Image (tube, rainbow, N blue to C red; front, side):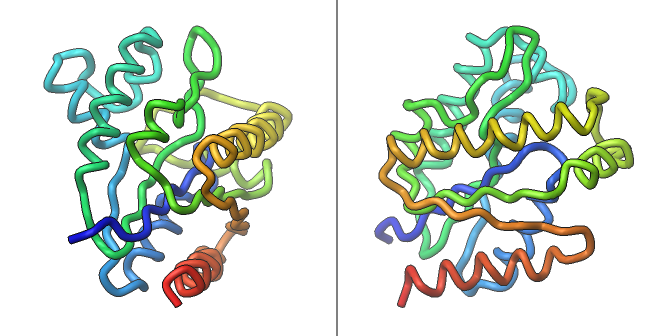
Length: 192
């Protein structure tokens, strides 16, 4: 089967990206989902580098780079009419912010669209604090606001390199279905 749409959906931790992506996949016939962090985590476990997913961001950047390459190659082999790739634009590491979509990853994934899920900084802080399934660092609203700005910058760079159009999707509290509907419309326009 030839490669169809490859929609890379990004957002900082706590914007509700995974929820919106899953709702989008569920509402689009023939859509599939590849979770970049899961592919990286699977590789990290095979290499015996981590025991839980949130340990990956504490790894040296060179190890993270290797995991990104492995994950991108695995995901790029997938085919389908609409493939959503759920990932992050950057990872906060002890060495600084590491890009989640460096050139090698973009070249491997070959995105047709780049979507950024966004939410208000206060909502993001609240979601992170209430997510007991993850080991999240404490952050302030000011730090989250800076991350949101950084995300737009990283997305613009990814678009420039890939040639893929970018869209910004607002995910307000309790309105994930509306955010998913925006994505469905983008896919509909691209497949019309």
